[in-house]
Image (cartoon, rainbow, N blue to C red; front, side, top):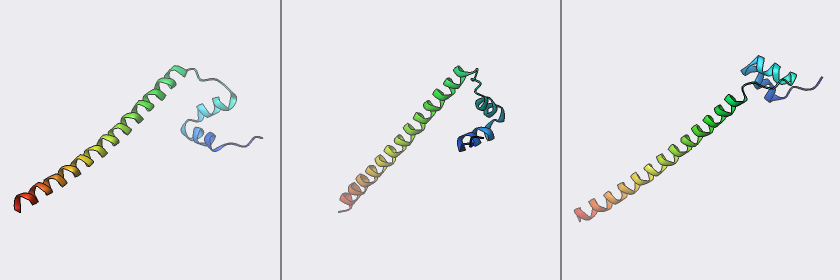
Length: 78
């Protein structure tokens, strides 16, 4: 008996049939759909990363605006 790896347990918990096919060495028939799904996940990951960078930039610009406003308001009072 060969040991069962943690990735196999994860695969089994996700889909018992897919795990069985994988264990028997039967190739998947929906390779194209799997590739499309993988690409979709990559696109989503890039979109999430871009939105995080844009949010960080927005916070930075807001901080700069607040500093400039404080400097302007301080100069108007003096």
